[in-house]
Length: 88
Image (cartoon, rainbow, N blue to C red; front, side, top):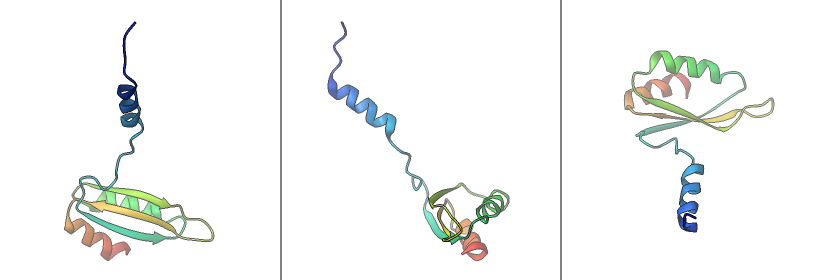
């Protein structure tokens, strides 16, 4: 029978369930609030216009009563500036 320590199993499960931090590796962030139905247009714009790496996060989804809250992360200040001018 193999002797496995409880600590080793615990560490394995902690790594398994660890959530990736969306800010990791990004120097710039911009939070926006947008009504329902707009986020797809924003994502399409980002895919076409941004030159560096970027990522986005849903904080709260939009509904009929409240706008959605989203955070976009960028590698470059150029991309963040273009995003702010267009969407913020």
